[in-house]
Image (tube, rainbow, N blue to C red; front, side, top):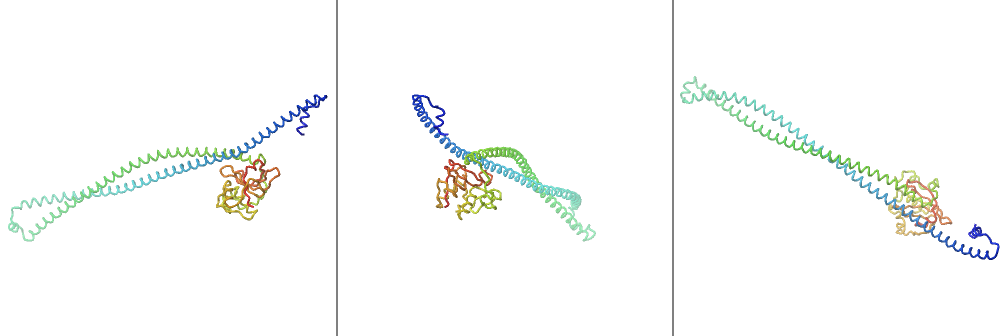
Length: 401
């Protein structure tokens, strides 16, 4: 039904000409007003469409920026968490080494204590022998004193014979020598004992110092481990919270990204995944590199393959795989870009941190596109979809031929 027909329904014919003339005048004014309102409505719709599309792009980009910020925050917190773990491990190692030193000192102390006890027994035995020799020496000294006034001639005269005289002299010298040796041995034993005792006391003092250090470090360890565990628990909690936020943002981002299909269905499409090689298509996402240094089951890996499959060549851009880098990479390689969609061109949607690359399968008469792609769902799956004309106008196209 035309606009004029609608107006006729609203303003029925009048019976007299005057009324009809007035009606015609009113109709013309109404048509004029309606046309103005229609134009205004169309302008409002166009502006709303523009801002809606712009909001979708900005919104999706905003989500990605937040996701990147949270991911970076998680990386920083995980690094700090790992550092705390290393600190706890280092502290435990230091305490273990200190305990080993204490054990070694204790072994030395025990050995010295055994030597001290042995020396004490030797000194006691030597002291007993010394007492015995002192008695003998005392008797000899007494005899020698009594005989001190006797001259050598008198001693010889009173001796039964000469050999008896020499035996007495030799015996006295032997006893004196033995007493002297015993005294020397006791003196040396006492010196050794004092040296051992001093060394033992030094080792005991050193061991006590080490024990005090160990107690202090154990206390510090317990304190730090307590703080460490609390900090790590807090970091883990924060990381989990960030991951939850990232999941929410990804869901919101995916919702915003659906604006690219203008509410149309995203379908599985070609069961052969557009010819994408099975060695990449069947492997877990991002587990392999394709021939152009890009991870498998990503949008750029798929479009690189489509360019190669269609034209027999695809420049190697050194693994610079972000979709939003492709227009610049293409221009650097002398490959033209533009804003007009063509069949078998690569469409770049410069949204989010990485952007998105699509293969243009068809350009429809209304300006909309039919594209194939990978990872539109952020799960590494192949899909096809219709891109509205309004959204298609916001894309950058790379013409490989």
